[in-house]
Image (cartoon, rainbow, N blue to C red; front, side):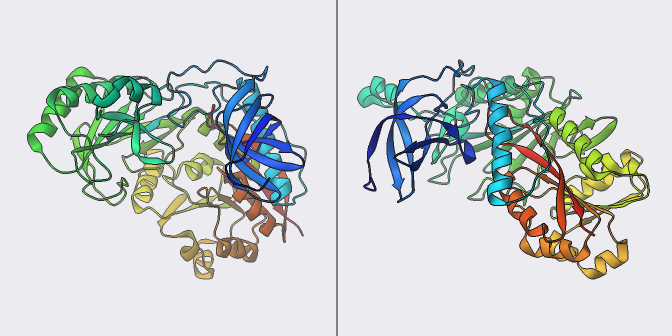
Length: 469
């Protein structure tokens, strides 16, 4: 059973595990399965990792389909790596996500949990993302059928789309993506068609050469549209010709930028986007708050569900108008500003200085006078002197990245011992780990899962912790 390249036949898939992998048991051994299978399917599985008590593998044949399956709506399903749960009815997706949160909190955190209300599902399950990033590549991913059809004349095709999982230099050419409102597809396809017609070079990540690198789009519920074209080096004539053509064909664009990135990686956080047209940013609304979003700003990717997430966070904070609230990992200040009317004072902390600049502007634009924001690493800033200078927190709201909070920060939070902590997480596994550490002084009073990303296994969860006296 522990040999490599073992194929298990006629395996009944019974459940989902972490990271969207399906789950089966064979002779008491747990099998984690990739390959777009659904609980209820019966499949053959080729094992990769094969340990004593568990194994990982990929479904290579489906003998019978689960009655829970539904027809995927995207032509790129199964290739691009996104929206992996399209073959599941949405209500089933929500049930598995709810179970994932409970399993992580109980099995990793070993926590005593209150009764959990049902997960808050999304009203819009398509075109819900306000931000997408597409990649240019001169190595389009081709299926086996496309390769066989090409024969010896296998062409090197350009692509503008998404990276194929585990193939860093292959990009799937995306014609229609259902994740973002129009004019997202119109912008993407207009740029691709112009580049192909003019013979512009798509980037080769292996050779580190080529001109067109990325296209980043932000489309807001306010109707404002931002496009940022990332290029490897300056070519003023071609750049202006392309951007002018784009503005002519897509007049809905309100802000158009370009960024020159000669580096080996695609990150633009250490680069300076340049405004070609418009004000250089877009504005989005949460309730009646308006937020400025620049090309490097972090903002909740699903505006509608982000608003719901923040309402839950505000409710859990239990504010009466007098409390000092610390907003850790505050980004552009959206949570802190969202709760500011119910708080006495808000103190926000964020690593990215540009985000703090936006937070301060957002506070001023919304008439928020009781919020201050500081740039720096939360671990470094949140020391005794900082708390002494800005007041002991009555409520701490923390919304860390997927890796969760640093152990030093959890230790500091235990030392500070604020009466309430509201922990907003995009990764229930690391949240469970952190809550277990905080359980030394805190009990979990409320938990609410929120689905921000339909058709994926990703899930947000909000937990209210109260200090035990």
